[in-house]
Image (cartoon, rainbow, N blue to C red; front, side, top):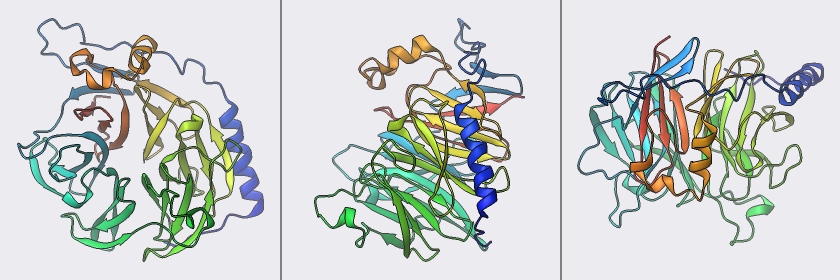
Length: 359
């Protein structure tokens, strides 16, 4: 698949479309749907969240974690073509621990690997190239992006970019948080915890160009944390979780600013299936958007609960305070082939939730 440069007129049309979306106030977007089943005194009925055609049965603490793994913050999740679920976590144990744990669709442990990413586990995505699938891993501690096969064998590793001015000073940190795939076989790397730049690489991992930097104006970012290639309207664009600016920011494939989506709180990462985009929001909710980037529903949302979660961030270390059908700090979310969702959370003990689609 080759990269197509949009014409000036189509760019203008896209820009108007996204600016219109960004300025829209979604009626009822902060409505908190009832959590069905949460009051079951026997504790056997799983909560159901969402509304209309988007209702999900929630299983918190999903996955049979093996004894040799002690969850740290569960940062990333992806699903391969066979339906296996890959979790990337950041353990704080003194002994190196596998950073990637793989489960089958029923939650049974399959394998683990990646001790070399211990303490830096963050983004993880999967892409099929020819007849083989590969993982793309972002490591915030060691400042690398790696491409591996599905069992962790390394194809290549990329460290800190050398050429750009913002890295010539050795004190300037490089801490890549997530990647997005490009239509031409290349990929984009967001330096979310470092320079706030986005770097474009070709399919061989060679640098091509970069853009961004810290700021609030269009084209600038504060923590470009997660990214995704959005092709829902037929024109490929890069959607970026501009987290500390409390917005999504859209760019053309060559890094030109297109517009904002402001109906997010503290967005962490993105996944898209069909016309539906899911945004994991670190402020205690998971949001679904339609193809026009209008909010369908905020899953698990309740403002009182959010206020508790954000009160000093204490609850992330207090599992006994967590409530069924509520999220604490969603850090990533992705769809499987059946439309179910897997949500990983930035909490001290780690937590995976499976959201089984009911409607």
